[in-house]
Each structure stands twice: as C-alpha cells, then as structure tokens.
Amino acid sequence: MTSANIKTLLHRVKNNPADLFSKFALALELINIQKNDEAILLFEDIILRDPEYVGVYYHLGGQYQFKNENIKAIETYKQGIAVAERLRDVHAKSELATALLTIQLETEE
Image 1 (cartoon, rainbow, N blue to C red):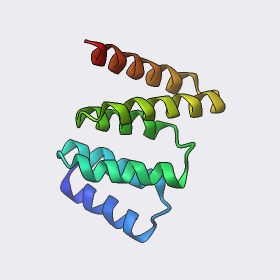
Image 2 (image 1 turned 90 degrees about the vertical axis):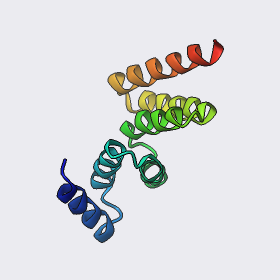
Image 3 (image 1 turned 45 degrees about the vertical axis):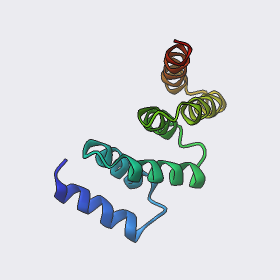
C-alpha cells in the first residue's frame, strides 16, 4: 500500500473511530512501515471496542511477541482462542493455537 492509501485509512479512522475494519487495515499497514507501537495501540482499541473481532488477536499477539513481551503474547493468543471457540471459528482457533504453541516452545528453550 502506498502512503496515499495510509493517509486514506488515517482519514477514515479519524472521521469514524468505530470503523474497525479501517482501523485493522491501518494497523497492518503501520506494521509494514515499522510503526509497530502505533499498530499495537490500534489493535488494542479494536479489542476494547469489539472483543469478538477474532482476527485481531493473532496480529496483536504477534506484535507483542515481536517486542519480546511474551507473557502478553501468550495471554493474547489464549484470549483469541477462547473467542474463536465461542464463535466456532475453526480456522482462527487453529492459527492462534499454532502461534501459542510456537511461543510456548520458544520460551521453554
């Protein structure tokens, strides 16, 4: 995505903070330009506004993991798994469970 597209997403989020899809897309784009802390804030806000936005947990956990905040990452993955189970989202649950297992194995080393 170009910086013009990021500006468009910023504009959408500013004008409609409840637009979680644009907020999610903006967070992913911010990660691509190494603005990870800003992305984390957006992901955290999405979860506060809609705890069942299941796709956020994987990306937020990954950002915590990237920052070596492994306890937060593990908790985020676990929360996401619980949400995926409630929603019967097998794909999301599988991705989150794999991420959780990976970080647990890495932290045991």
